[in-house]
Length: 155
Image 1: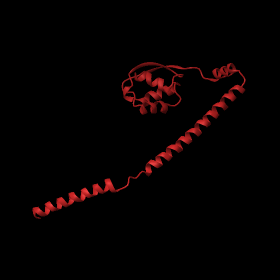
Image 2 (image 1 turned 135 degrees about the vertical axis):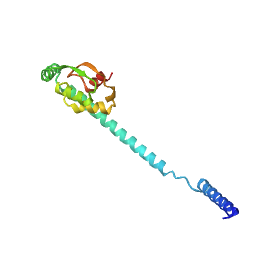
Image 3 (image 1 turned 60 degrees about the vertical axis):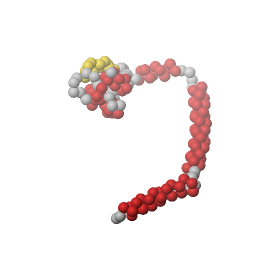
Image 4 (image 1 turned 90 degrees about the vertical axis):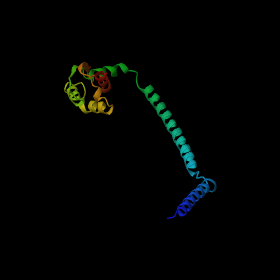
């Protein structure tokens, strides 16, 4: 191709692009239907929120009424719960080099400190704390939560 042909081709493409830009900016209508849908969705969500608030208020009233109707004997229930709950078990957890969160979980389940080893293991993995487990001896007991045990062995 000759230089002049390439020059005219470039000028033609430039003009075509310019015309498309002008057409889009000045002659095409803005599409605002998404704004209408968003406003409608917002109004609908506000109505739903109001409905949920009303339901919550009604449930709170029902709860208050139910609590008023119950006889005032909380001490008997507390004594029943204390009698039925198992005694707190203590355990010295020894973490040595190379132990994994799975190993620690198994030890604690065998000692009766936790009920399910997978709960502790999954919590440690989900919180990305496996690499922060510290070597040492730790006093744990069955009244501790998984979070408390994890904080103890990772700090």
